[in-house]
Image (tube, rainbow, N blue to C red; front, side):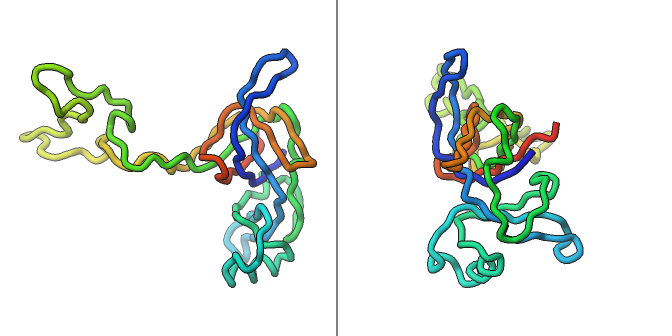
Amino acid sequence: MGAILGKKIGMTRLYNDKREAVSCTIIEAGPCFVTQVKRVDKDGYDAYQVGIGERKEKKVSKPLQGHYRKAGVTPGYKLAEFDFSELNQELEAGSPVSVDSFKEGEKVNVLGVSKGKGFAGVVKRYNFGGGSRTHGQSDRLRAPGSVGGSSDPSRVFKGTRMGGRMGSDNITVRNLEIFKIMPESNLIVIKGSVPGPRNSYVKIVSTKK
């Protein structure tokens, strides 16, 4: 059982033992280091803060430079927190977190932010069927239709599905299988797709079942 922070590299197809093509996502999970250990008496909760990657110190703000320096690690690109039970081991600030805590065939949950689509209408956002294509309706093909009665209830109900910003939501995909692990390259290959565009960061956590 383990947890780690990774960067989505992209998708490919690999062959399993039965010579079946399997769609997989390649995730670069490391190098990762613990940057802070949070305790309930000081911070209000218990958690490990983990950073990924290495970049030049001048590219990081002064407060973050001091934060990384206190942990004794090189500044990274992304910070995320994991519960003590997720990492399932005693760690200190500066300790490495590697893909060795996972096994091939293990089930994991992947947490990420979905692709941002910008403004989208109801047909794309909620799979509405649109209006009639005949009887002179030339401008209602992708419209939502009536959203509220004029006399009763004389208002639009809260939560009515309308056009608006689509995507950029926190998504958790559960029970994905680890297809392959390459510790020498800090790579994890997971069956199926994970949320987010290429080069976005995701959290990989072993399932508790």
